Amino acid sequence: MNNIKIITSTTREGRKGIAVANWITELAKQTDKYNIELLDLAEIRLPFMDEPNHPRIQKYQHEHTKKWSETISAADAFIIVLAEYNFGFPAPIKNAIDYLYNEWMQKPVAFVSYGGVSGGLRSTQMLKQVVTAVHMMPVVDQVNIPFFANLIDEHGTFVPGETITKSAVAMLTELERWSDVLKLLRKER
Ligand SMILES: Cc1cc2nc3c(=O)[nH]c(=O)nc-3n(C[C@H](O)[C@H](O)[C@H](O)COP(=O)(O)O)c2cc1C
Image (cartoon, rainbow, N blue to C red):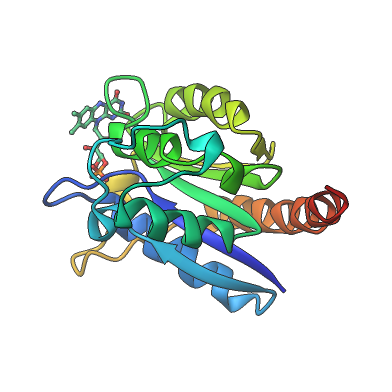
């Protein structure tokens, strides 16, 4: 079974994206195909990248980096639950990526993006460019959720319609395929 880590992108008080993260986590767990873990950057609380060396050499000085490295090393694939701030990606997710290098390498990443009219599309396009710098492989199938706040009920639960759920199932299937293939590639290294 592949280990899929689902990573939030926002950490602010009162953020709404956690509802989307909880939804995709539960949906992925329902398939029984993956080991799923939700990594909430608001709980992990990485400071602004403070390592003295380039992550490529893995000479980490700080406990928070060593722990983050261990967590990401254990992953076979990622789903980033991505907000859009000022037409781009929120800083916490970029910071979390910048901490490491080899740990992300040759692993697939899918995006579940949310926002207003754009559904986080601009943010996704920007982050796709970043993830390729650490040799992650962005999968084409993605989930974009425009006006997502309208789909959060009075209990704070994200309740999407059929179209969004279908796109999430397609994304999970594609992510699983890439996970299998890239696992083999990493073994050869
Ligand atoms: C600083 C900031 C910038 C934002 N910029 C955008 C934007 O460019 N595009 C968009 O669709 N929504 C934008 N929004 C609205 C967000 O989609 C909405 O607030 C969403 O809840 C943010 O995710 P979060 O609640 O997980 O932080 C912005 C929100 C904030 C706080």
